[in-house]
Length: 94
Image (cartoon, helix red, strand yellow):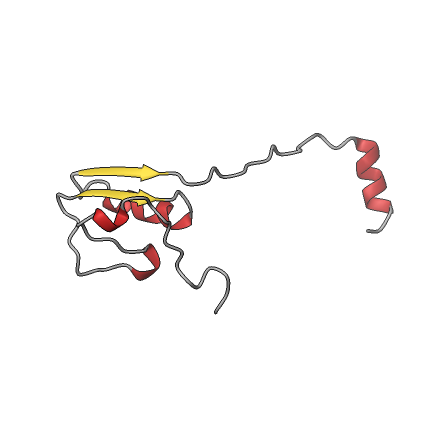
């Protein structure tokens, strides 16, 4: 389905125009390009990287992962629910 993430976003990396290697986005993976024995860089640590990195790490010569934006993780607000609260939840709807 079309949406905000349906168009691959390629980061603007200074000096990219001088890079002579192969560049492609995970959403447009070039399956014809053999990564065996290559030096590979992954830019990003999102869902795609979580799937790609373990699959290629033992195949490539060197793998470097760059994190562009840190993931936001909020602490879980977990606590024990008292017997009184449980009784209220059982008796008061919603």
